[in-house]
Image (cartoon, rainbow, N blue to C red):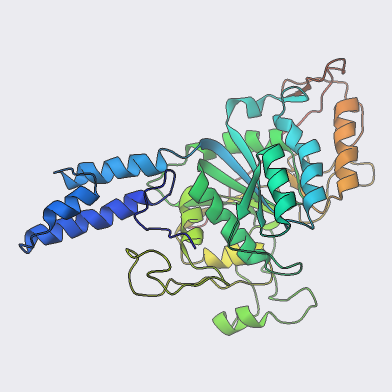
Length: 385
């Protein structure tokens, strides 16, 4: 396992600022108590006489070398079982970001990255997919089982994003989700969520509507893990449905804890600089969205309500669904393809010809009609500290 805080020299390894901070403390302590190895410690932080400058330099080298985006969209997926779903997503709602297919005007003002994260599996197939698409992150020390393991997969996916990118917001969605990209970006802009100040509590964005859910597994039996930890038969508030958004500080908290199946024994597994104490491990509940809400209970943050479907809510019974809906859920691959064809042919994912063009979403495909669907964002903010 790669150390989260080890003083490694490879380019792009995160948490080098934390490493530098540890070495600065060591240098300061050595100087205060008259130890003779101050020069050696200073050499380790770049040979700088000023510890603060050394820490800043190492932080710049680490985090500054990571690709930076405004919105990071991560899709945890099984390396083998979800290969077809990944391709369908590339061919459908991911094309919102393809200016030669559909020009999503709100998307153009932000840098957005879509990333599928997979565990170990068919190495040859995964390597070929990574080479062809450049949108796959591989968890080299984790193989997701065919059934279960969703919570750990989500935690490791968030960790992968933190370790390989810098971002203002992270959106996690299921492989069966449909992202109305223009509505999403409009919502985030309207709520000024791209402008969140790092000095204030982070944001947890999603569907928090409705009463507390009973702590039940898929077979309607009691979630014994949760009950044994809390004594409660009801889950805490969590973002339901197709996905949720997190600010970087909340991602850092989740990713910095040990995962269910990994060695959390501390040093040297997590790096000699980590310390002797074992790394805290997050409890994995049957549903990853519940786990995220549970993990964030002790963390100061702001909850922001966003219209996210729990089931398939758009294009039902001849209706478009809620105009403010940002994420739809439980969409089969065949339905995704049909929705995208509808958008290209009629300017609307539900297959209705729109008569009033808008600047929000227009088709850029050569020879296609310029009509587009009308997307209205009506979103409220529900804050909880």
